[in-house]
Length: 405
Image 1 (cartoon, rainbow, N blue to C red):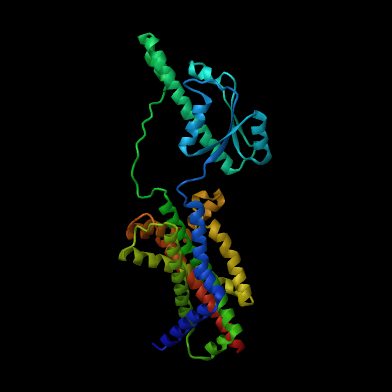
Image 2: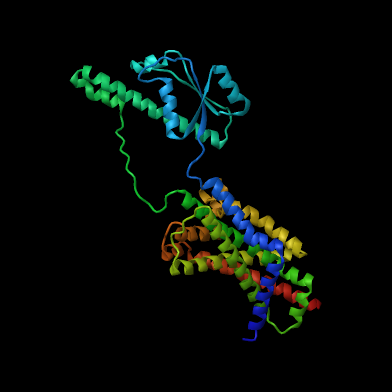
């Protein structure tokens, strides 16, 4: 009971310091809003940009299948923006100069006649010679569209040819034209990829990102800040136990993370996020997951504290570690998108698991039991161990400083 007063005093001091410190306010309240809104605008877009495709038509012949009809069909899909050229060389020059358009189609003489009469019809596809991911995606889109047009031509030819074929050969002709009878059926799922889901995904990711930055920075710098401001001398000369000091800072860290989390969730709503699992059970489970994230990151920060000589150095060290972990630890970027070595690391990184469990509930509507089952006991033990070792490191630093007083 005697330690309650100092703990509350530390918390109130931390809140007052947050209000006075514009830099901390930015990182805790403004930074998550900016990140979620930018990410929502870039990634949570239900209407991806159309791919610009250059077209040069040498054969202007009209027929059931001609270049004009193909170009119109491309535009109607919404996936392509067609840019027509008067000469083949003009199209090739644009592709070569700056990669806009990145793709081009050349319809040579005789294309329409051959395609309409059931003869092989040639088209030439040009692509810019770079290996960027966006070019590969655009190229795959175009080949998929042309494959669909090829199927349409093949089936149209079949309809004309079947009545004239001997009955015993009709099944073979039909199999040649359409060898795989593919039937598409859709399965409803709560985990579809939509604007609302992507926006929610980024917002909840930001909650854990903030836990990463806040926990590391507070844990690494708190003893140095107190020493530099003179508060540490007062704490060391008072009868307050070290665990009470640590508890005060830990609770302050949780308040900072909660404020940042609320800012992240609110920013998600601004970019169209839909949170499906908001109820008493999920809020309680979410609180457990966020507290575990805060304990883990603060423990890591406490372990970093002896490596720094000042609060500024501690903050720089914590930030230098937090930024790579944000991207390579499966927190901000999904683990499956990472290169293999980092993917393996992300699969075992505690914050990645905690982030996935939060998203399962809040974004996809999973139950608290499902989310908590994603956190194995060994992970909880590891988090507690990191915090315990960090706490022991902190108490050791206090003892050393007490001897110098």
